[in-house]
Length: 231
Image 1 (cartoon, rainbow, N blue to C red):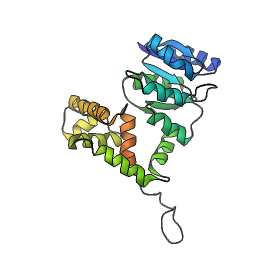
Image 2: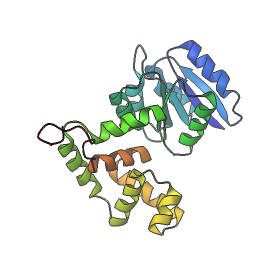
Image 3: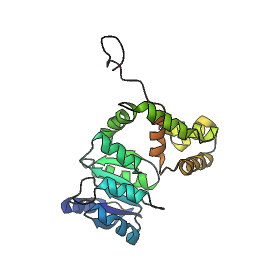
Image 4: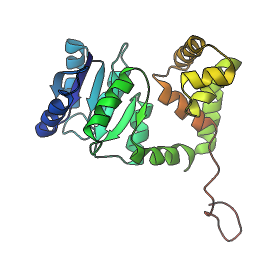
């Protein structure tokens, strides 16, 4: 069974999620919280595998709670489920170590599938926020410094580890990386684990973000001034 902690200040939303997840034979809701301040104690008491986390709550918000939770050893995976999805909140949640970001209008069956996915150690992003995430990590201001910092961190890896990290950044699965680099899947998993440890990261999403930071894309076509230079 995948043990789930629900964190949302709306009791009706929590009741709906509990009812919906009750139809999943491999998912069990073990506790509920109405505020991020309650998360640490409930995680210690119930040891969930996945925390389904709202963002906007009256006391400690979900992003702050995620940052605090994922900084702890042996933390459960965090799947953000919210109606509030500005660029900055998506990126902050993922950089904090959240394994996924879904909107509350996601179909019930897909929420259960996402819980299974993050419990297995794989990332999940709602299609509605994927474009925002890409734009946030590949455009905007200050990216020369961001790119230089990210490249310096990747330089701490061995050659094969960097190849695996780059493949993770391209969205490849372990099986796809194994085929591309002519490695066994367990070897790829070992490389990913070493990358996470060496760079102090929590999951594959953070590896992908670091790779994107190191290789920012050119500005989109069409955004040019009269002198022909990209704006």
